Image (cartoon, rainbow, N blue to C red; front, side, top):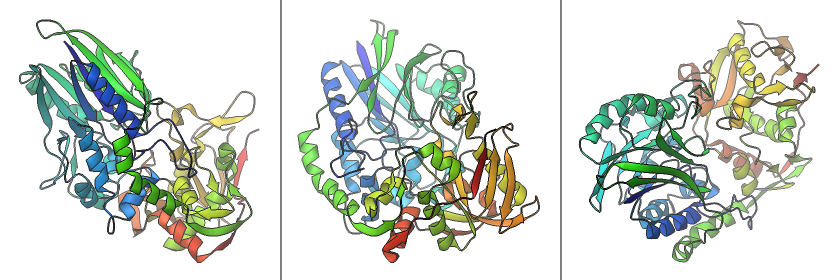
Length: 516
């Protein structure tokens, strides 16, 4: 008998095959394509289980629109209806499920017809988690599914969004539950919204061992796991680690994870296979597409609303150069952030190389596709030494190549791309000397014409992800926050442009980079 375990992960609200960069954009991905692949696979297999592995509800313009209009429309409920329609056997929460707060998450998932599993996170009285595990029997074979979520959420999330929630290491929870589940079911499958922190072949660490990703340790330290479904890193991964099949199906529904377990007559695994199924050529389910058309079209109309006219150029063409020298778009974001919080220093990130900046006629589409996360703002009071440490982390983003050119350091690209962990600062003058070793690159740090020393006290505006240390910035922490603004940054940008229908782009000159 063949047991097939299908999975989606990190869909991030991309239901239709588009990134919404234009009204008619098409990209060969999206949950509707993934769902069609799942439907076809079900028809061809003896026994199929489908796991939705987290980070489903946040990340796309459709997701943002559903959240922002929840007081007037029920588009947000269509997320839950979508998962119900395609017969999820069990779900797992991702870290981004918490971005809009527990109340919103509870409402989105209120009518689910599948269990949400979480063995290493909990909150008394929550209406989101159903159980640590679920045992499902099909055609006489019982499979135990254990749900796990990255324990690192408190390092990123706004404290108010996870108030009362407790997070435990995935390995700790698995050590508790897997031996028990072995006595209760024929097979044990772990669904983990987290990634692989080591080389799958050698076991060598491929990233700082912070506990954010524990996939390799799960298999190295917890015997009895028959298959492991992962996510979070947006990697495309189908392999065996320590003899156990493992999948991670990428991002935005571009792949479906597929683990096949061939059982012998005694019910033991005789052979296993891990693969990723492309969704690129899959058709869209016609009935579902029609049902979601109103939400989709309303999102497109919202995105096309004009906001302001730009004098100058705020389009992004060379993303590396924008990070090296600053850019009018980044300067604009920082200026809006400083106005909102009343500080003289602010930082922002160019979150991905898909960010295009603003056209001369700026629409909501430009803003939402450029500032893609639902971040809010915090103000922290830090020392000059702490600000220098943060800038050193930024300077480590770059590497000086043998030919004298500048590139992005490998640890910001692999195993997971982390372009969002480099910040550009406004309100200070500073220099990166890339000829120096990492940790000793920041030079000539000046604020309002005065050199910043270790003891200088400074108020800095950051997004809340960075403000609690997210992205390996331990010099920032929740206990240093002295003020906050609960409005999402994208909404601040939209409101600013509405108040200033004619905006002059400003090219910054405060960041200098030495390469020789």
